[in-house]
Image 1 (cartoon, helix red, strand yellow):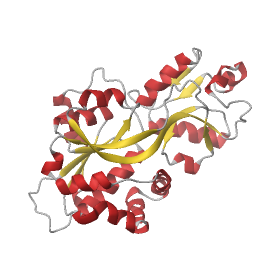
Image 2 (cartoon, rainbow, N blue to C red; image 1 turned 90 degrees about the horizontal axis):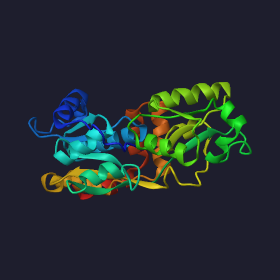
Image 3 (cartoon, rainbow, N blue to C red; image 1 turned 120 degrees about the vertical axis):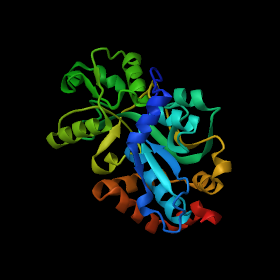
Image 4 (cartoon, rainbow, N blue to C red; image 1 turned 90 degrees about the vertical axis):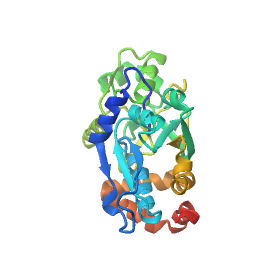
Length: 302
């Protein structure tokens, strides 16, 4: 899903290097013994969103097991991801939400990165409400103007990270729809999910910022409300970006990533499975259940 727009005060290179060093999680535990001990690992960055975590760890597993190549996963925020790939501190990232959500970030680095491919289509940002709120009460963002609706929602829209593109778009939506009496409660994905879970258990009214794909649509009965002004954008695609010269330096992995694409329904089912079990187990299951797809991704590289 995704995310970040504002580039004000972005992490400078020194800070990024420190962040990456602290945040790095090696995937070498599953490395094959045939790998050279001094082989340079492929460094892939990701931010802590459930869709990014699944596709990144799935790619890492397949690169390690099928392409006999070490992988180093680096978890950090979105701004350092774009900077890291553009500067060559990271080899790739698999979560570029385009053309709108990450437009500002991509515009600043587009001449310094290469697009390897699209990992999935049909990504969406929006505001959600639980299905137990009648559509006659809330069907559109416009309906939040109703005094009785505002009261039941306590004048709050539950948000996520402060630097998220969805946050910036949601702030704009409040202005576009004249919802000055509402407050966007900036938090995190985890904070938003806690609010949703607590409200669901008590059947309380809420409106929250959200995106697809997300596993919570498999757990709760939720619906997007209409956005007639298109303040939150329309369907997007999520791309894989790599540093310049990555194709030349590591053609096997670059070719694999360029072929990797998941149907949105498969991804959401796998993400929900990961929440019920673990990401490792869900990834193993996905690989087992999709042999032809995996073979097509790996191609002649494996």
